[in-house]
Image (cartoon, rainbow, N blue to C red; front, side, top):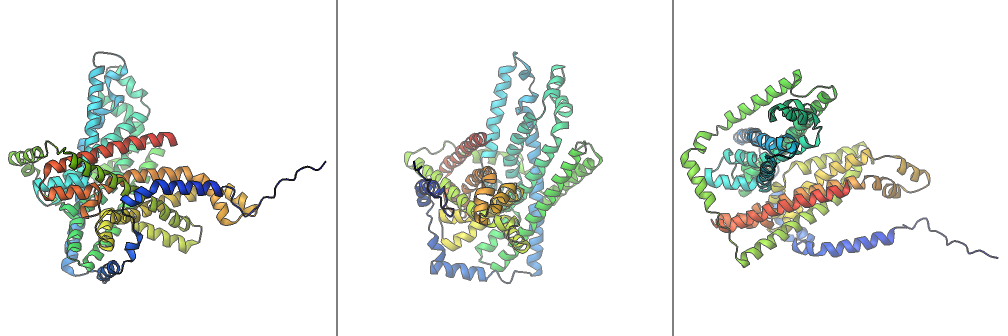
Amino acid sequence: MNRAQPAAVNPLRDPAALTRSTAFLLALVVLWPLLVVAEFKPGALFDPQNLKTTGSFLAGFLPPETGAEFLSHLVRATLETLAIATAGIALALLIGIPLALLSTRVLAVAEIGPGPGLRRSQFIHYGLRALLTVLRGVPELVWALLFVRVFGLGPAAGVLALALTYGGMLAKVYAEILESGESRPARAILEAGGSRLQALLYGLLPGSAQELTSYTVYRWECAVRASVVMGFVGAGGLGQLMDQAMRMFNGGEASTILLTFLALVLAADALSGFLRQWVGRAGTDGRVAGVSGGGYVMALCASLSVLASFSYLNLGFGELFSSESLRLMVGFLVSFFPPELAVGWLSRVGYGVIETLAISAVGTLLAVLGGLIFALPASGRYGLLAGQASRFVLNALRSVPELVWATLTVLSVGLGPFAGVLALALHTTGVLGRLFAESLQNAPAAPRDALLDAGARPGAAFLYGTLPEVTPQLLAYSLYRWEMNIRMAAILGFVGAGGLGQLLYFELSLFRYAEASTVIAAMLLLSIAVDATSAALRRRLA
């Protein structure tokens, strides 16, 4: 009896081709409305008029401005940017540390067991968590714009904006770090009648100091970038100088400032990386970074840097928080209430939220594709020269803040959300490309090598051997950056790149504070929704 012969398998055919094609078509169906809302029109990049405008502007970038007078302004602006970041982080620590200690359950005496203080402790805990959500939910650029309206142009607005937003961020993360560590020593101290401070110093810090210090250094690195961005609304530093150069179409000055951006961000990255490695070595040596000899030196250098920053900025907080200034601040804040809740206005704000989400989603998707393209050579797969060139491009892309990219893309494609999409895509390609390259470098080589030994082509070996191993990590990085990009998309409109930021900037320019209050509330609610959604997705991926 003849048995049925199995059908021949074509070794050149992708067995998952149908599944991949179906998934691609479904993704297009889902993404198409977002592309429409984001006004995704790549042809605008090649419009003759846009090309002429962009070409003439970029031609003015050469040669960079090197005049002595301009360079002196540039040096002062660079020092001011560093001082704003350092002073802002110092004030953020003064806000974040007490809030973290009060909001973490680990240090709550009432959490030891049932008692009369339990309900009060829970009320304080959730109340402080709500306050932290408000502080970090409003972007620092919005805080800076509001403070500029009260205190005028200058670095004071940038320092106070960083203090509020980063104070909320530090408090939230500090509390999570303390709660995720070993809590039994702290609970034992509390049960024995010790105070919160004793439980912190002797129960929690020895095991969490390394992670707390590392995150603080990382936040200072982020503050350097943020202080550059806040200058676009008049909060001093390099951003304010860049904004002036762009408004005057002075390409030579803009070119020099961009090169300074690149050098400053790379230097901050290098210093931050060195400090985090130092903290890591101190932890592996069995010492806590704050009680070793090197820790004292580090604390002394940080203190001197903070004092030098406040001295250089000469903020005059006595005048800023005088009775007259406080009266003006309270009056300004009162003008935001009650928010405008007319149906027509709420519909405009709702569309602004949708537009912000579309900008962030499309920009992140383009960045994922661009990041993968650059990550392959950056991971060393195509030789040393290609790897170094790709890493340089990625560093250059991520060193320019999104708001600076937005000012350039607005010139290329005009006002609107598509400019925001391009700005996010360019900056995020640099960020994701670097992270993707590190993931590819750390991927196990055995599955890929086995496919190559079996005669598979290099492309197929990558798709079926390497990519499945790193896909969860790449997806986690992409979701995290999308979360960050939603917040950034909400403020790109300050330079005309659509979304809630453009709506807010327009209303504040017309002194319509009730309408602006509604937009800020929408930003805050969007941030809360993003936090909750991101936490749920991370739990599912864990």
